[in-house]
Image (cartoon, rainbow, N blue to C red; front, side):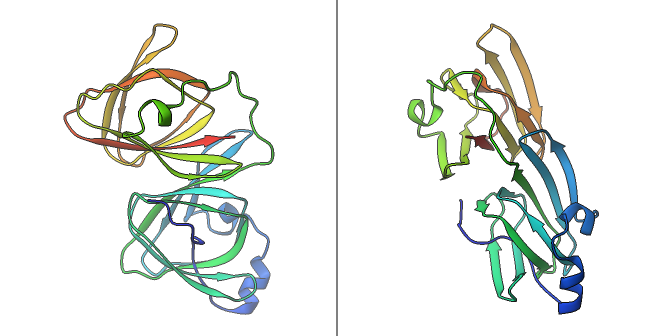
Length: 225
């Protein structure tokens, strides 16, 4: 589940930090930060750090995070403060804008999805009236919410069919293998097989979801406000 703790990693020399300060993580370390998708409202990064990898000083805007593996990092902020950060696979977090260095403190590679928020917010195509959290609270859990995002954890038991519901524009991250069908408000049906760790962008959507796979499926939805 969500832990409100600064994510990321740690440091090395002051000169190195100063030389890289204020830089985009993708430019500072493109092998560690890759752009998964981008539009006018978000940039979604796939983060992969090798065991004991160190990433120079860089910046992120406010961002939501989904941890695909366990994570243990040491983070050095721009003022030199070092923080130990620990998350379990499947947890989520929200960070305010940060400038920091990172170090993977474990013997294992780590992987996470970061949804960086750009200035402004999308105008909703429609007002959400069918909130899944109110309609089906047992299977739509709020991990975190503020004035920018709401992070939902959707749990789909085998053959579970959700009520018809709506989402504003959002990013979805699939934590498990998943095979659903989505019945859209316009009558279309969409087949939706997914692999763990996949990411997708969704515009405002009204739909009913059914888990047609044999296993419990879990996905994270970062809804934009």
